[in-house]
Length: 300
Ligand SMILES: NC(=O)c1ccc[n+]([C@@H]2O[C@H](COP(=O)([O-])OP(=O)(O)OC[C@H]3O[C@@H](n4cnc5c(N)ncnc54)[C@H](OP(=O)(O)O)[C@@H]3O)[C@@H](O)[C@H]2O)c1
Image (cartoon, rainbow, N blue to C red; front, top):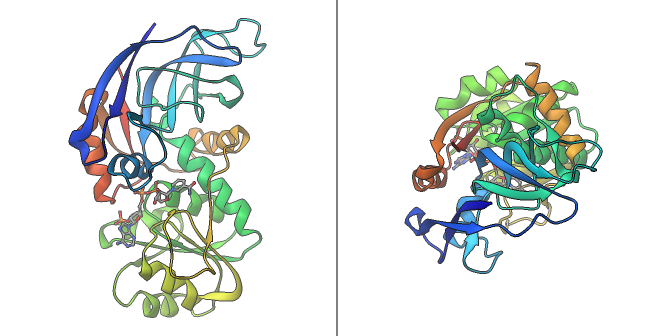
């Protein structure tokens, strides 16, 4: 079986992206071969493309999450069959038409979930669950960048636990933040004053999904001295009080979020769908950094 894979042979803007088609080797033990139907596009993909994250040798491939149909699997695996609809992350670069992934990472795609939605939940869902686990007990939470993918799910997980959430976003996403259940605040000049006015008591915790100095200073000024301050941005920050948070991939965590999106308890926005052939446009847009929810590549 062949796979068409999105790759780059050098770092740069979206025009470094190209497609190659390879014959896949025989499927290894413990793996499932998936026909990809949809795959979310995350900031990490674009940041690897530009060279901000130099993780892999060239040529590099992209994509961390997928939804698709099992094309091949060990018939004695005990759970899954060819034709099952699944989603997940880990074990393969997913911006490709066919991928091999560990059977242990597979999560069933609920029938009522569209491919576009299913293909965008693994990264944000598992990251948001990691944030909630790592911040520990809290009654109040400040989210920097609440309108993006990770922020949207983090707000809803926190609200489910009865946590009072204040979240920053651009002016155009204030209503969206309110609909997710948080109190919205516009980021930018004067942020600390606006936060203190809206939430005079210090926060128990904050999570920075942006990684800029405004977010760092606002957390330092508004979170209790013994509170949790985390950042997923993977950038060097000016304060060592902000702890790096890295996603822990756990299919049980993903299943938890998927069930809530599928039954309508959580809302989720796929802001834009791009045919796989238009991946360059998708990456160009992701670099701008104002995606509401998540964007997705759609495969035939
Ligand atoms: N460490 C890990 O394991 C891990 C895992 C997943 C993601 N991440 C990282 O976590 C971050 C968030 O991911 P995501 O998928 O949620 O990103 P995203 O969907 O692109 O969301 C970005 C958020 O940042 C806000 N924003 C943009 N410019 C801003 C500015 N100048 N000041 C304040 N806020 C601004 C956006 O708000 P508006 O759209 O309203 O402007 C939006 O809410 C990314 O850096 C990503 O690479 C890390």
